[in-house]
Image 1 (cartoon, rainbow, N blue to C red):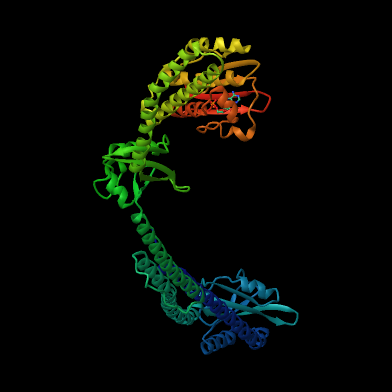
Image 2: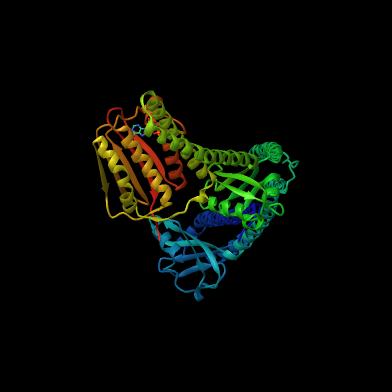
Length: 576
Ligand code: ADP
């Protein structure tokens, strides 16, 4: 059972008071009783000694009649029983009974001791009178012998009456002490518990939001320290809550003023915070405090949030009505919350589309006249002589370069369109390479290069767009042959976990480290003059990177000048 602090304190005091008021009278009474009996015995002994002097001459004279008379007279006077007993145990005189009627007293404890020459005392029930009595006996000496003893005795009942009076007084005092003690305990317990109760009351009011509540001083040093700390704590908490509220209001104002949609969601799906822009973008009403699956009405936004909460996506684009949104998410510190931002990129997307369409259209439009120029230049070249031949060759070479450039720009622009363009399916890499290699064998042979294939089987199919994957291999093998003057070009492929990792290694000039990080940028070429000579556009590796990234893979280069280059890339394995 839960008991209050008052009860506990009072119980402690009450136990002490009860123990004191029970033990004190008990001890007092025992002391009083032993004092009373002690003084009764000593009074009996002193009287017996006084009587010994009186009885001794009568005993010498064998005046037993006078002895009996004196015993009964003095016994009456002193309110005491007086008995004279001889060595045989016969009672010679007694103040309360006829000696002839009394039994032999030889075996009485006090009598035995007195005949040994010492004073003897005892407490017992009298066989003659049938009542409890205190006895004291002393020897009556005649010369060296002890012919008889004189015994004095008192009724214990007389003593008990006096002791009872004293005992009752002691009990009355103890009772009053008990009542007074309990009263004091009650008051003291109240004094201690009252301030604690007041503090608990203050804490309760603060919990209910009343920050004006303060604990009053109680006059008890420790409790005053506690109430001061409590008051300080309340003031500090109030201040902190004020600061936090102001901070929250500020954040709210900032959040609602930004154009981006912003929402904070727990992993469980509960929406913790959302600004107006997000509510307008994706919700029918205020989403805060609801599950995003119910609050968010736009399916695409909901799908993205679901995927992000499961850790499958971190960013994405989505169309909501006529607008295009770029979404991203990030964890909020160490919490289980994610913050999502939705940026309106409609204008940017439109511009990008216009740019892309323009590039696609221009390259498309340029291809026809360029092909015509190439055709005519080739025809003219067949009949040209001298300088004309040289000029026509230059025209032809530059036309080829232009055609390549236009082709690459078109490829890149088409791919930028959207990832949805990929026609993903299971692609067998060995088969794809088998059909590709013949394209390069002639060129490799002309340059005296060995073209090798190292496939670590079994190779599962790749999850890829066959046409695009082919383009990646073509660009890389084409570069390897183009930049390698002697040695070999090796194409490798192996499975690594969930990816197929391919590599195109050559024994060419290699690439200096400062260029390596920029190789995959558009139009980046290491040696512009050489690139021009070889008909390079600076777009081949940019296309490779774009395709591989669209497949969810990666591409990297490993090379050092003079030691050849290895271009490796990974695409996912096809899983049924
Ligand atoms: P390009 O059409 O000029 O070859 P790429 O984008 O394919 O354009 O390559 C970019 C540059 O990277 C090239 O200009 C070339 O300097 C360098 N490069 C690409 N492949 C190799 C290779 N295998 N060995 C040496 N350099 C290479």
